[in-house]
Image 1 (tube, rainbow, N blue to C red):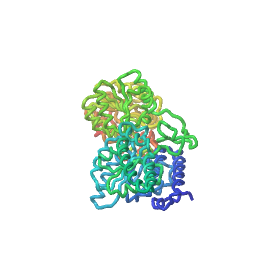
Image 2 (cartoon, rainbow, N blue to C red; image 1 turned 45 degrees about the horizontal axis):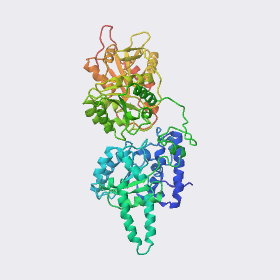
Image 3 (spheres, one colour; image 1 turned 90 degrees about the vertical axis):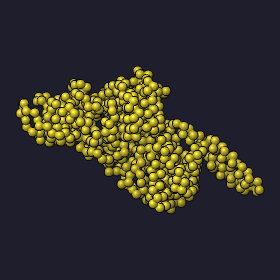
Image 4 (cartoon, rainbow, N blue to C red; image 1 turned 180 degrees about the horizontal axis):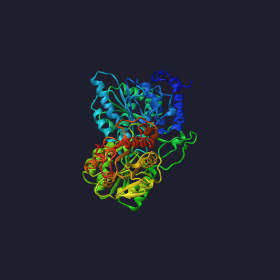
Length: 639
């Protein structure tokens, strides 16, 4: 039996001898590469925390002691050491292991932490709660230096420092990166200290040597220690944390298990909030990841474990089309600037940054700051394009509402991975954006259906100068073109019946245009005449769409957003406001957190496939009352 297979939980790990731990670390890395190469997943971050995680579980008593990961994509090793060594062949797939901590999987997963910079607030609340209820439990938050660029982390630090007797241990996993290299003033301070990671070991060696020197040894050591403290305070971030009242241990080599265990034991017994600064290497132990300068194989798709090269068929994604168009727009428009929140590569802005380095801004994991800074850029006469994943728009809603929209500033949001993203699970589905954006006065939102309309609608969005705009598109491969038969007032007609006048208007938002055409062809075989349209701009609802609805007996909206406050809801409100009494049916995502799985699996599970749409429309059309040629259909409350 391998060392890894003998560890079915933290108790087994604690029983291992120190000389067995290097073999365990090597086996974990081998398993990580083998598993993630088959399924895809977060490889680089987990290769970097192998020894750190081993040390954590040998020192603390999970699940009694609470371990929180910021973010949770670096918890794969934690899962392996807490009884989840099986099932990695279905990582992030339907019914398989989640790519983040998951309470349904294990009692060792307390917080399903997948949005950055939140761990310290969780730790503060839990530690306060344990103290108030008399529970003698430690809370350990493992936070990356990238996540420390988020303002919420510093709000939490301010409060943690006030609890002098609370058992909070903050492990700063300092690898100099989030997705990409960490930026900003904090990163510079941490980098200064990272340059001398052997510092504590040198000090300890000097202490041991001097302690053996009779008479003069201890005084010399004391003097050197005082000098050391002054130098360290001048060069390192120790003062940064000490000024907050937090005890600081470090820097510690995060790949030295013995050193990590020693630092963590000291932190555990300190009796108050402690910072343990661990210096690690993202992608450690796997040459293709170590040599990947861009991302250290942060989150690759399936790949060849021997070479690190992708094994799946090449495809053009939505993000790559946006990336190309941004460079083209930047060449034509010197007023366009791009903003990203620590995701230059994933949002497709890296080529723009290379072409226009002075016009591309990475604010770190700080979406709130990104939006208000964008408002300032717009006020100064520029047109900012803020590219974020749709799920992270949630974090900057107040700034969008009160700083961008209230001031009518021309800021364009590009919401990548909108709708169902699938394998990253409930926290990453971009299903909330239209519900949020629909609240914002003056907000205009485009939803392209293919590569051609993405190019077209992005150009339209950045041409608007009297208020905010957004453009949303899903994850994955993009269709080059779903052609329109004609355009009516900005609305594209994708399909019309060959003979009889259509009774059903099928309104397909964004990437569901292709699905709508496929469903219409199925419906024709059932004798149901359907017009399929793509509104292109989904908020506000185009007047032309309301006019088209008047000519049909049933309107069906199909969209990949939440039903409450989503596109169908907005369309229903527009029909009511126009006193258009055509019945409406809304096919959208149910208002619940959707489990992880492929995008196709998730859409099938909620009834958003061409077959599902055709079946539902057939049922609804059959239930319509029969009316005379000159007699209007009776109204029905839209839902």
